[in-house]
Length: 81
Image (cartoon, rainbow, N blue to C red; front, top):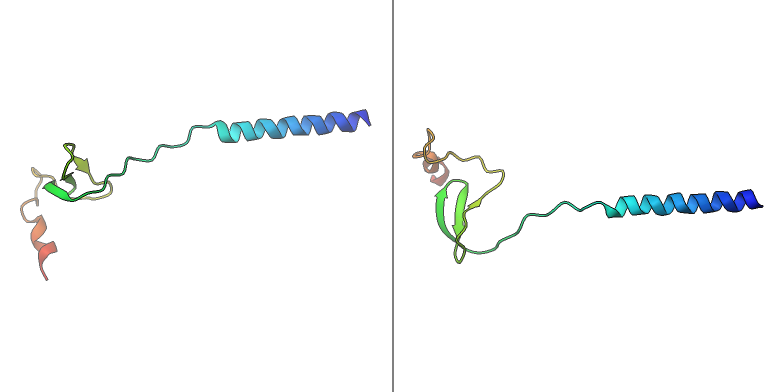
């Protein structure tokens, strides 16, 4: 009987410790979301919203930068109908 109580108490302690480890880890931060109207486009992947002073780089967009080859003609093909 005493051995069964000891094993049950040990199992509860291990379970509580496992829960502590699972939920005590820091959660990954989600990037700040901003909503608004585009006020200015710097290049294909950098914009500024109305009412905000900071530049916003669009993640996952592969567009040529101003000093890269193909920048001047990059909008011509996408704007054709």
